[in-house]
View (tube, rainbow, N blue to C red):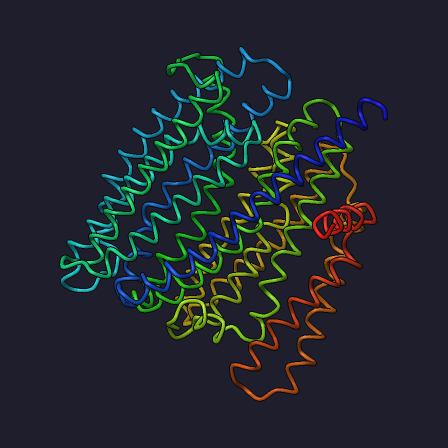
Length: 511
């Protein structure tokens, strides 16, 4: 086998191995996470749960900084490893630490001035819960700062493709969060305050775990923060343009949560919070594939192997849509009962909120691996200016819709419509900059995924007609939709090579 083909084969096996590892983690995390969410919702109640989501959204807007610098640092560290330059990787990590410290100071200033003013003057907080709201706010700010300080370490783990580290730490994190849920069950003090404080403690332990792991396994992390003006400027410039993309997205999502609070009160933040839990579960499943593929997209593109990076971007996009369909199809038909089954409580409006939230996830993540391709290309200025200019329209359009009396869930419709346009523009820009052929996306992603969606929805709808409303109908819908999606994906969406890989794994397990 030629060296190039052998390298691609080895990379493919590494991606598959990492994906399987991450999925084992995800199944366990989903079970723990769902039980934790049930306990939290039951013990905090709708109002406090909605308050926690609304107040947390104020701080989450500042999280755009963390997301932006994370993408920038991750790109440079991964590219350094792809070039095989250890000294360059060490320098990048040292400068990225300095960048994280500087941004922590900026975020802290914003959170304790503008954010604090907005919380206490503009938010709709129930009477008598102002103190609890500020307590939640400060703890959420602490979580944000810890996340920002973790960015260089997390980016290094991803660049080295050590997915087992994420698996182990995430499992510990999930168990700690479950312990938090149980702790507030027996708390004699304010449950919301205790929940916020304990979640801050969990974030600190997670940050400590990633730091210790990196210092033990990666020599480039055994360094102190360094201020290198040239590299500092490159990282900030890259992060600044990426800020437009991640900043616009979070401003739209968290800003919409705040608008929902202002127009409809914390009562409507509760179903939006439950929908957010479903949204996070779907995103975590998709990200398990994306995390395993992204480093290879960057490394292969930097190494000049564009065709392989294009192939990986299409595979990641296809897998993302197929995974989302596993959640979307049953939610289309049985959203209310599924939400009640998962969380034990079902605030009014949860069904339609959750279904539309999953659709929004699809619009957001269908091109997530192509965003990695754009970052690997490096010339991201035009991409983010155009996409951000379009997607930022979500917030004013949503505000206008709410002001005209539209229901709270109409915000999701606005998101879907605007992102349809944004996704098309993303593909056009990537084509012009990298040479990627749109016909390949149509052939390898849209047609097979569209076929799976059409067949699964039609079969599920047909079976649903034979059952009266009730729990047995929900079980039938869940089984038929899952079976139809999996089988149709196998025959209509996977390539012969992918089907052969799955068969070989099944045969090996059964042997």
